[in-house]
Image 1 (spheres, one colour):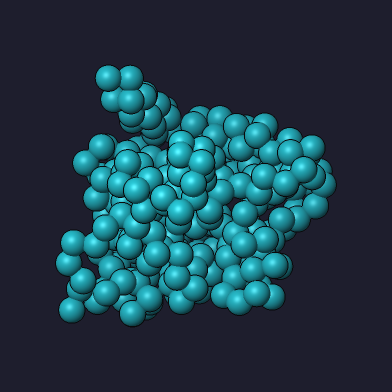
Image 2 (image 1 turned 90 degrees about the vertical axis):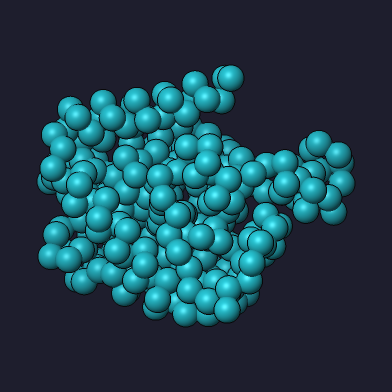
Length: 270
């Protein structure tokens, strides 16, 4: 039986669970013939970002997503799901390829944020994120993004500029981690629960604010209780929106995308 009236902080806990379905779980269940493509053709490959081409219900698509581990070894390998700039440059390379061949792009968002380390900053972390956002704003193919776990800061937003943005029911989408928010505002990271209430990071909050387009239901007490059912629900929602978007011209896609995010900016200014 579903737990009623979970707080934003409790949803954050669910979004961060190690047994919650990860990007590769969605790829394995939803797509066929997935071929991973690596490297940014500039510095190297970033394991925290997975990308490639696949068939989605018989349709050739490009898939992008953040990749997290389930244990210490995997988390170290994938840098706890925090991409370096080469991850976002890989994303740009694959998005341009998708546009060239007319493939829609499907993105899975699940990161606490982009990696803020010295090396990442030296290699242009902020520029890489900004370039990714700029590219997606004018991409001439349909883009569907779904927040499947924690969507933190610009590291998540880089994959979030889409024609349709979906969120799993217990996912969160935030300007930064609640711990970071509390540290900046009150200089006390232990006030993360209080920060969550102010940040309004839940799917329900963001649907009401017009930031996302649809909430995808999770089974039982969360996606971790029945991953296959959760992924199936996401599959249905993605398919429905992608079918609609595939009927739009390139010009209409870009125009509607611009209007969508411009309207969000207008709401923020009020």
